Each structure stands twice: as structure tokens, then as C-alpha cells.
Amino acid sequence: MANQIKQTLTSAIQRVLYSLARVLIRHEVSFDEFAEMAKRAYVDVGMKELTIEGRQPSISRVSIISGLTRKEVQRITNLDPLASTEEDKRYNRASRVVAAWVRDPLFVDAAGEPRLLSLSNGDDKGFSALVKSHGGDVPARAMLDELIRVGTVEKTADGQLKLLSRVFIPSASEIDKINILGTDVSDLINTIEHNLNPGATEVFFQRKVMYDNLPTDSAERFRNLSKKQAQALIEKWDQWLAEHDRDENPEVSGEGRIRAGFGIYYFQEKLH
Image 1 (cartoon, rainbow, N blue to C red):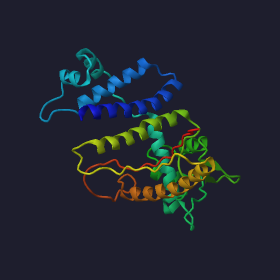
Image 2: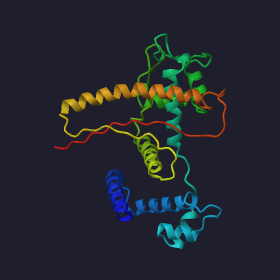
Image 3: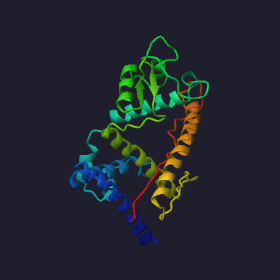
Image 4: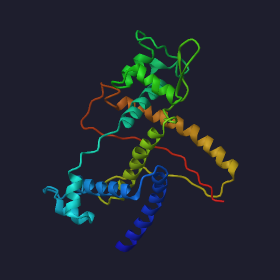
């Protein structure tokens, strides 16, 4: 059974690596650079997560479970810790601002649609107020420049601000797109890893639907249908989470701090 599990895992990881290799090669990341990243991941996980209860992690134990030499493990543990990228912070803040523009009663009209917003600092229902409430410490002007840059917002002829997309998609920046690779893919793999863990008391929801003999026009109709319905569902969940998040709603009480969410993605592959 152990050999069968390892063979299946090897096959599964190989499929993941094929997809990842396309991204790495396209952006001129060499195998040696990738190998260095993999070494760091093995050491970090070994030092921080695969510890024995009641005992401090050691260079020797991480060397044994990772297959790396003690010298390599020591070298990697001496590296500076990885920090959140500025792109990650910018993406999260911009996403919150756009989401609030869609759902916050202060910034929608009677029909529940995002209003045109003014740039006036004195308008408590204007863009500056929106960014102040939901954009962290980012200045309103910097946030506006970013949203205009990626095509999420435009200025109207009379100087008002119009929301063009109900979700922040960094379509104009390849750096931002690559950053999403690190967040979304890792979240999905973390969910799968949790569900594979025999010690998990409750599995996380993980489902997909797929057929492999669709004509081109049916695939296009499904893409449009899924996009529309998934967007509505995402907005509904976003509103619920915002109401229960202490950053968005300081009145929320309770212990602990949990990061939780739900992702939806569309996939398509040409077979013939």
C-alpha cells in the first residue's frame, strides 16, 4: 500500500510540475533556481511544521527527513526569512476596496449597483472615504492610480469615478498575475493537503465538475454561464466574510485569528 501511495503521489506531483515548469521556463527561471526554492521549502517545512512534540527542531532531523546534507540545511536556515511582497499587499488592499464599492451601502445606489463616486476628500460617501475605510493606509490617489492602471475604474467626463469591473483583476500587470500564482495555488494545495491528512477531524470542501467531450460552442456558453453565476456567489460570500472580519467590522468579537475563504476557477483544455 505504501508503494502504491508513493507511486500515485509521484504521478500527481509530476502533473503539477508540468504546469509549473511551463511558467518557470517562460519566465527564464532555471532548474538550479527552482531546485534552490525546493530546498528552502523542504527545510522551512521541516523546521516549522514537522516537529516532534516537546522537542526543538534540529538541523540533523531536518537533514534526515529532507534528504539534504546538514551543511545545506544549516545554510538555508541562515537565509533571511521571506517577506510578503509589495504586490501581495497591493492586491489585497485593492480587492477590498473594489469589493466594498460593490457591497457597502454607502457606495451603492438604490438598485444595489456601484455608484459614481466623487474625488472630494470632504465627501463621506466619495472615493477617498471608500479607500480610508477599506484600503488600509494606502493614500486615495495611489489607490485610484492603481485601479485606473488595471482598467477597473475610469474617470467620467465630469470627473466622477466609475467602477468598470465588480472584481479587482490585475490584468495590466504580469507581476501581479504571477503573485496570484503564489497565493491561489498554495491555498488549493493546502486544502488538498489538509484533506489528505488522516488526523483531520473535518475535511474542507473541495469539488469540481468536468466533462471532456464538449463542442466549442458549448464550452463557450458554459464559460459565460459559470462566470456570471460564480461572480454573484463570490460577491455574496464576500459580503458575509466582510461582516465577520474584524478589520472590516471592528464590532466583531471572538477569540483567535483565522484566515479563511473560498475560491472558484474555470479550466479548459483543447483535446483535439
